Image 1 (cartoon, rainbow, N blue to C red):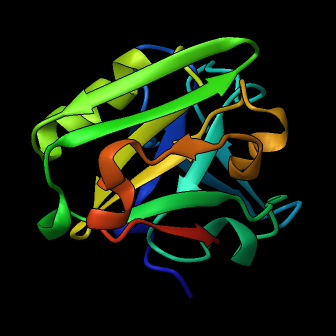
Image 2: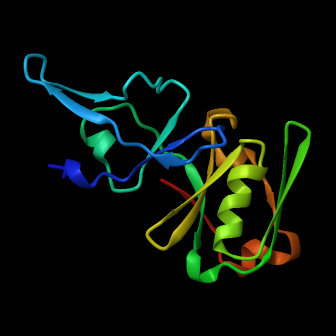
Length: 157
């Protein structure tokens, strides 16, 4: 059984406040034997909830899907630039360190990508503005070899 006190859930949206920890009030209805995520009125319809701590959502019967993300060790981040084009708009993300990389992705990608630091890695994640949250629909241009130099890996999980 999952330890409900140590969930690592994050909400990923195109909103400027995203990503943010997702901390619902978890309720169990013994009559229907159902588990509910009470979000105090927040609509989950347009949110991608990432479970960094494991398989909590899947384990308790919530509809889930695997999505892809770029994964970069925080120890490997070097200054550089990343560029991508989507919907006829080109976005360039310049950065000097971990903080710049995360902040500039979260504020300068038109809401298409978000970055989360978790357990020594930075995850670059597509938001709901990207069709099916599919990272493969976004081609990150490796300006000056930044992605290669940082050993960026595209993962699906």
